[in-house]
Length: 303
Image 1 (cartoon, rainbow, N blue to C red):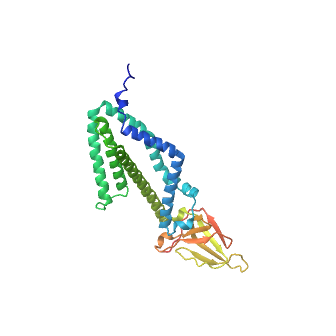
Image 2: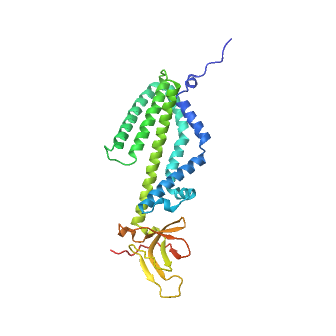
Image 3: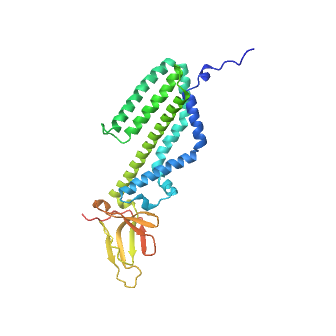
């Protein structure tokens, strides 16, 4: 009695990286939908960017009370680039993985040499990341997570391909599970770190832009029934002559930063001219009247 025909060698030996990637893809497909993933990334990027930007302008983010939807909407511009990159990588990763497996089966010698070279580059990347993380080398903030992530991925994936070409006795299933879990967690943490640094950088750039050029914010005039004693570079208080007017004082030289949590957050128009300039929070109720203008004119700031 004859048994079933033997499977193709490439299919029979389709272990290691192929099964690992298939398991990961299967779990992610059942747990994280594309919509959930995109919303989570946009929420995180928006929150980190907003918190960094408003902290740079002297406003504690807890005062803003921004909602999930507001964070997502404010993250559209800064989050679109990393999202496109992540989704493109996720799209081409399975195809690239299958192509590498077929190439490894057909060109074992060339693949072994390529793995040796990339493993050396991966080890160098890990070394550079550790040196930068320890503070022994001052470099860009992207270097540490990028080098560590690249190095770890290349070493782990290259090791899996090497075991496919030259099979060796594998350890226990528990040891393999622990190694795979630790590697996956490390890569996810490094990816999260890189996204966090990116969002913080965009938030710091936005705060600096507001400091340098306030003309991009709506010009605001505040009318109040009583004196508010608003102080700041470029703010001008005017007492209105009509004693029967509902609002007796007018304040100009202000820019609207954001309206949130039933408050108006304002900045002096000449914010950049005074390092001690402060942000101003006013209640959004009937005690005040605010007028806004979209005219993009630079304020006349004191020297």
